Length: 357
Image (cartoon, rainbow, N blue to C red; front, side):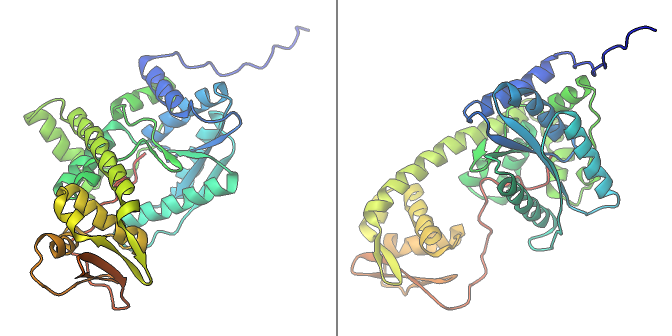
């Protein structure tokens, strides 16, 4: 009787340029973590997140890290539980452990995209806390970054929105922001992986889908074939500028802001003497940090005029804040009155503005 043959293992995929690029991007993002740390891949089963899961499953052990996955079932379409379980099976096949599936209830606040995003990030936060993960990896690509910038331009949201998505934001990391979506799909093909394609990514009622399917291809065809890369470069430049200005304002705020019972104040002379970029950032910083209020541009300008265009006008009523000028200072105090509606929504600089892969 012939001896038993050892169990055959699945053949490792041939190392192609697409697979190598995805692995390199993950390796560079994870290199600073400590041995034994756990990272979780946010896995939808789509091409981007599946390529990320495969690259993480390969690179994490070589860096002494543990890698798992969390799959969020939004329960927004028939068969979503089967899609989530298929993604979980793919994660296990790639050697990820633990693999968590979390079903969420998506509300309606802010519209379907915003509600799904809020539910998803709440589930990811909870999964990281439950497992002790030090990072959650998101599969956003260079194309996603370009779409974010274009949508920010359309909304007129300023440099915070033009800066797009950060590679690292607290718990969250986006290793693939430098890679095109097509390259990630190729990495899946080269590795013999079969991604799931979200039908929501074909529905034109979503602004991001319209940008992805119509507007960006039109710009690529009629304006410049490199417009997607150019938009992503714009995000890098805007983020560098925005972070530098924010750091400057953080430093001066410690010297300029005078705290008082029920509020704080700023010297009007400093606001007048400095560029609008610093002036407006300081006003928004005070409102956000001291009162938990995100100001729109129109509201910020109303406050700034108390310094730059002072004609004895009355104070400015903001959501939960009253601002007035007294003795050469701009005084912020808490107000119990109902919040007035914003004339524009302040941009979330790290919003992916859609599900993504």
